[in-house]
Length: 327
Ligand code: AQP
Image (tube, rainbow, N blue to C red; front, side, top):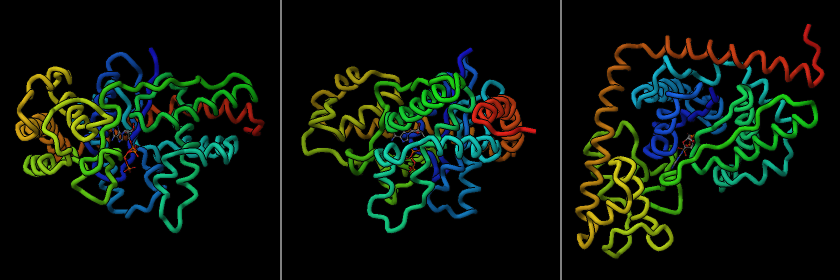
């Protein structure tokens, strides 16, 4: 069975972008792959986090995984920080990563732009992400389009290690869907939807109440035309809304274009809001039940034990090959 690994940062409440770009794929893949789905809390602290908020958000991300349909009996669900092999291999791979490679990462450029002081962890984060993946000899990594560059670096590091120290790591493949790989911000379609955007109107979270969802979609920026047409170059905002509609309804973009032909944006946006509410309301109900049951702590403990069982021998082999004495 092929191995799959992915993770999401507890840097806020998950957005519809995280759901469409990542979690929907996690749910599909769990049926016929060995899956490891983490809450990547060590990545979240590459930008400042309030301890209480980090605690709450980490728990919430794990509970949202389950609410979205990840079955802890099929996939291992755990917190990255509870499997110490991640940080250890992260350091070892940092020593193999070139400064120039990290300097080219667009996510670092975006997240550090305009900031006076930037933590070194934000810069070296891609080496830790490579460790997350290589630690399990992962075959497939389901991510949104924005993570493609980091995955390329992961592949380079795997090949570099293998050619220097002997064949050790599997070189992983990205698993990126075509439509909806990148859901854009509701206030600016040139930026991806991000949970840490200071403008709450720019994203829809998985826990937004129905009225908030309706309001955010009605205020989503669109061009001054009225044609509901998928054309990311000429009509990026409407195209983004069409992608969201398609993912939430299961209809193809062509079918949605035909449905709203000649009707303008009003009815389209109104129905889109109901499609999103239709997906998120049952998810929120499951989330409340999971929260009340306190089951998440047992799920996370079991997941971490399953992960360690795979990760520990691989890290031991890496250290052996690099020349560390292991008494
Ligand atoms: N807008 C998006 N469209 C499609 N996929 C997305 N992902 C994130 N945003 C979108 C995918 O979600 C997974 C987890 O991402 P992450 O939270 O670990 O980091 P991120 O990509 O930096 O996500 P955010 O929401 O933008 O977080 P912040 O604001 O903290 O930086 C990844 O698979 C990603 O591709």
